[in-house]
Each structure stands twice: as C-alpha cells, then as structure tokens.
Length: 270
Image (cartoon, rainbow, N blue to C red; front, side, top):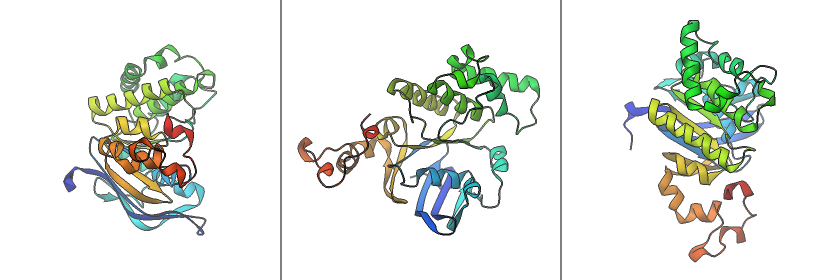
C-alpha cells in the first residue's frame, strides 16, 4: 500500500453524467502513486475515456460533469481548474485517436506542446532533443507533415507533444488503437522507459489487456462505469477470473467465460 503522501492522483467515488441525463460512470475510485503506471482496462463503453477526461477536466466540452465524488491531484481538488491550468501543473492528456495537426510538420506538432509555458527558444530546443532521444523515428520525419506519417508515428508525435509540456502525469487514452502489435510494444516500451528514467507517472486507458498488464505497475478493470477488479498488474494478469473474463480461459484451459457471455473483442487477445 502507498502512503497518502505518495499518492499523485486520486479519484474518489466519482459519478459522471452527460447532458444531465446519461449516467456514464457510477462511483469509480482509483489512486495512482507517484512514479507509477496505472492501466485502466475494460471494453468499449465501460467508462475509461470518460474517467480520463474527468481527470483532465475535459468533460465540459462534451456536456459532461462530475455529479458526485472528487478528483484530487497532489492532494488538491481539481474541480475548479481549467484544463490549461492543469497542464501548467503537470497533467497532460493524449487523446484517443492521436489528434495530430495534419497540415503541420512533425516538429511543428511537437513545438505546440510547449506553447503553454514561457520557456525560451533554447529550452524548447533542448526539450525537442529530449523527445527525439526517446522517439528517434520522429527525428527522421521531423520535416514531414504529420498527416503523411504512419499511425504509429502519429501516436509517437502525440506523446512527444505531451512531453514538451514537461508533465508529471501523462493521461494516455487508447495508445494501441489501430496499430500493429510490434508498434504497440514499441510505444509501451518507451512509456516504461520514460517512467523509469524520468519518473513520469502514466494513467493509461487501454483495451489491449495483454500488453497493458505487461508494462503497468497496477491496474483497474472497469465494467459499466464501476471498478470490478484492481491490484498489481502482474497479479491481475495471473488471476483465474481475469483470464476467464478477458482471455476466454476457464478451469484447466477449458472455455469458461465465453460460454456464459459474448466473446470478448479480438483486441483483448493480441
């Protein structure tokens, strides 16, 4: 168990609605310790993206709101902070679908991540070199318009842009979406490297349970807006009910959960 002083982010019994009518998250609670990677797992519609947007205060743009509970960052409530203020305090989100500026070059995309600060040009240049150190492929493509790069390179650009803001916590939504398994492994390996080398914490929403549990420290599995299982990632990956629920293996290797509910989406099995 982590001490209270070690908790970087806490989500306490949060309920979220859209348009004052649709209940999307039903009392979710989780905590992320400093320097850890927390994977938030679950199928489409479970509430993963909604939870991440609550952390980054991006719900209002979609007529969403927290109707119960609280989100705290470094022990302080975030409800009254604008998203830009959260970024300046170290919370940066990489949205699902990458959202690069297609008409800008890779390097111009990266530099937009530094616009929220008052850094000098020389400092921004050093930050660029730091990003290129983790993503050498981006250095090779830095003069190419982002719209002409591959999906994996666009995801790397989106993460690199977040790093330009010098975050303490990166909120990463579905980084594996639409990418080949080798590229997914490469991206998660870099995430782990950033975590170990620089102490950056990550909250990662992911449908690919196999890869997420391999790289995360802790994990929460959510269904229908609630946490149904949580704990160390390695422990969850080895538990029978997790294998049964998300990998389709019952006792002694027999088909288990698949017999009782629809087959899980194929991306869980990657």
